[in-house]
Amino acid sequence: MDKSPEVNQKTGLLSQPKAVWAVAFACVISFMGIGLVDPILPAIAAQLHASPSEVSLLFTSYLLVTGFMMFFSGAISSRIGAKWTLLLGLIFIIVFAGLGGSSGSIAQLVGYRGGWGLGNALFISTALAVIVGVSVGGSANAIILYEAALGLGISVGPLLGGELGSMSWRAPFFGVSVLMFIALCAISLMLPKIPKPAKRVGVFDAMKALKYKGLLTMAVSAFLYNFGFFILLAYSPFVLDLDEHGLGYVFFGWGLLLAITSVFTAPALHKALGTVRSLVVLFIAFAAILMIMGIWTEHMVLIITCIVVAGAVLGMVNTIMTTAVMGSAPVERSIASSAYSSVRFIGGAIAPWIAGMLSEHFTAHTPYLVGGVVVLAGMLVLLTGRKHLAGIKAGH
Image (cartoon, rainbow, N blue to C red):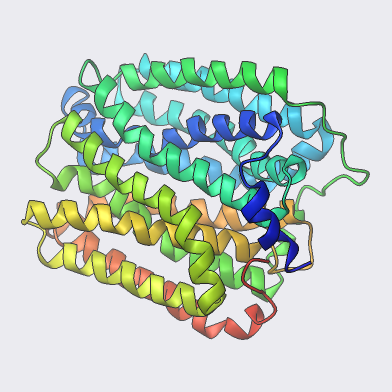
């Protein structure tokens, strides 16, 4: 069992049914939503007369709703079916992204981003389970495809946001609605009806799964890691003195490296060092990058370089953690994924607002330095709980 995914990974990674590609395409568009607003944050702040901490709530509302709803997405999917859950999530995103583009105040926009997060929760957690279920080549292949879609979406999101945002900060929101409508049509036509599971997932099964120490260790470390992730993503646009195009290109480079390493480098590192050691090395590297950004915040070339290099580190972390989570608890993969993703996104949700408050009350350096310390805390959680992760094998 441990060897077959590796064999198939070489021969079948790209030989997937068209249903897998339809869901993966929709994943790319969905993950665009994370970085899409990055290049337009300063423009939104200026035109809606909002402070950096207020504008950062666009990330907070989106990620907080996504995180909490992911606890229950498995229960919803088991009742209405995976395909209908995907379609319902896409409909929410289409509607609320469009409404976001019509907002007249920062409060309205923050609220609509929360609705967008609701659709995102239904879609993202179900998409991983669907890709695992209908792909060929084993779960390792499916996770690599999913993380590649994540990386591609995160990289293209800022680029699209920068290009459309140069016309108007509203344009990226309308653009997502159009792209998600295309994804809705693709999944409707290409994804066959997936039978409902014989046993319904309990409403609180994902929360209960956190009682397993291995899954809890992974979730808490991901919570702390994601804090640093979104410090970098949501705060950096306010540090860089760049227009929408410039910010779009910087974060495109960041996301492109994230996508490349998540597919090509992460499996090799995971196989060479194992779960805990590879993650410890990567957490230290990410914390060091944040610390460097915190010390030399005024040096724009250095900050841009650190952002792009961080993408390479984050791509590997994402893939290794997602792969490890699938074997961290004796529960169904979809339940483990929902529990882990919920805690992970909630960690990301609080970071942008805290970063804005730290920069307003202290200095521009403070958010990065705090982010680095929090990532190191995530590393300590991994080391403390490593005995509960001993059974997880690379390439599981």
